[in-house]
Image (cartoon, rainbow, N blue to C red; front, top):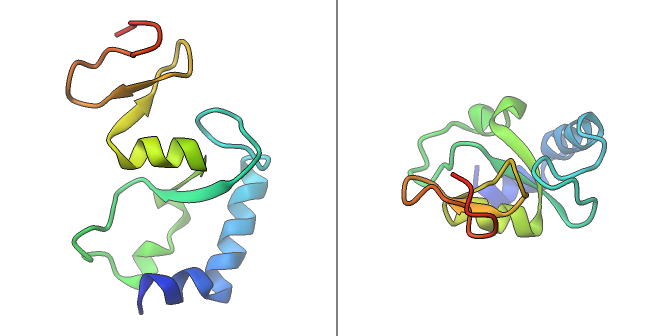
Length: 99
């Protein structure tokens, strides 16, 4: 099953709605309520996950488009100021200089 087929499946849509309700329809990083997307905690770039594993809700975060983009580019949310910092590099937030 391709990713497109998974995302269009009824099972995926049901799981998405359950997750959105669980996080009160807010981004789990910044509390934004618009353009919410499901982001996988572990990227499946090698296509090593089965369809069943890919649909597991414990492998998913609900993020807004901006936070999903940041996560996809190796950044994590700063707990002090909600800025972003790059994982495994300088580990310093660009916004508040917190480590």
